[in-house]
Image (cartoon, rainbow, N blue to C red; front, top):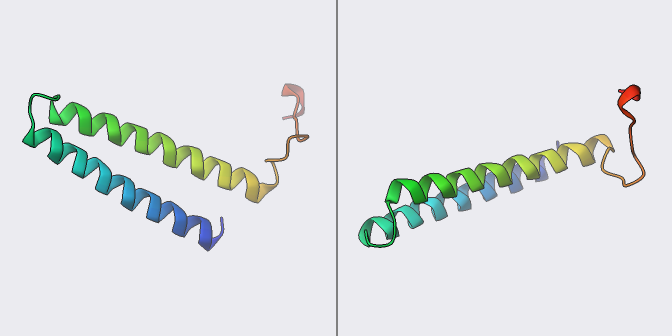
Length: 77
């Protein structure tokens, strides 16, 4: 993986963590909205899913597996 892809991933994680923290703080200040822990954990789960997806796409493109014509049969693995 290139340094640029890692840098983008680090920035994405940093911004995502700031958003998760801000969301948790906002819900903590207004308890009528939802439980802060539930909202923060849900946002963290979405962030993790996003990061895993981005890193998977970045690794696939680095290997050359990201082209639409690159199909592999189950027997060819």
